[in-house]
Length: 410
Image (cartoon, rainbow, N blue to C red; front, side, top):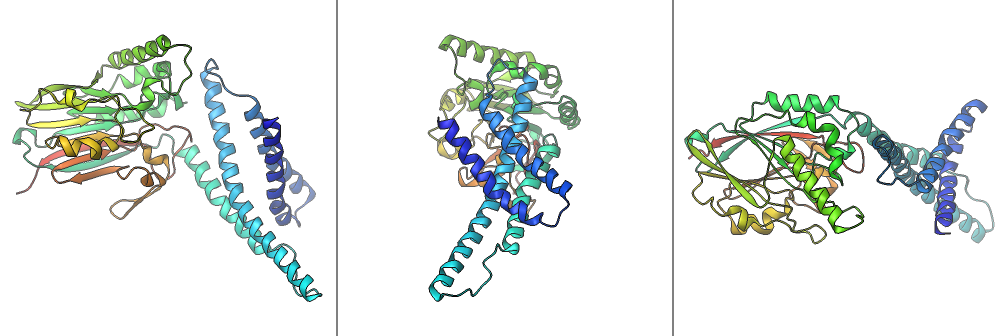
């Protein structure tokens, strides 16, 4: 019954918005009107089909990806329709006001037919998210951008001058459809000749098996001194209805084994002392730690930090950037750089390098993309390699980060 009521509301909403399209097509040919009607009403039918036919975990991967794509198309269409409906509603309020004025005066004073200006403005307004989100879905999924950042580190040993660190984050392999653009991205990483490569969590969307089709590609990542990784909130399988706890734990074990198969050194609240040009670099990694209550705190930085006190440079991998202000800069002031991800830059925003940076995610995470500094400590938040939910990006492109370390000028 609830689904039936929802369908009625959906159809009523679509019929209301359709009035705008009927108005602008008044002078169109009969054939053009039929095409418009068929195209318009195909989306509500698609929305109904997606509600009636849910996708279960055993469904084939290609079907899940198709389902995700169709769901995104429906979301984009209805988001755009909401803007059109808003202008229609304003126009209806205007017409009702005119009718009330006419009744009060007892005579017709104005033309209370629909305003073509408001309808055209509503359609133009609705076309902005429709075009931009569709473009982002079709062309920006795999449009990787390399962010090259030179970083002056206080007290950096001379032997570590020019150290090249590549970071990727939030692969979300369960969202991928194509292999070729991912292979090109890995080739770009290797072309950067990194000394260290860091992966800061969310290898999958939900289950370890999502990574299987791409293991052979990601295992090609090369680094002079190793590839290091941590877990993100999606890696634990917390968003899946498992039949029992044992199955969930087996999935996590499988995911950890995948890191090993990739040749990545997975850091689970631990550290590695890496010798580079005779200097000790401490690479610390914690499990997911968030200052937000809805995300888990598996991380134990105190345990990960133990034994690194004498390192000439301390680098931390922590998936959630809220960890930085919640604990790191308060209690561990000698950790020079923290590497995080998690936010994806919300996959939507505006960036004009050196001038302007905005995304809705900044109202949830103050540190959400790029470089941040407090005194002598830095945080870098990677915008994410993959995507989740909305299968695309608008304004915030998938990122490969290259940090080059330099001594701080005295």
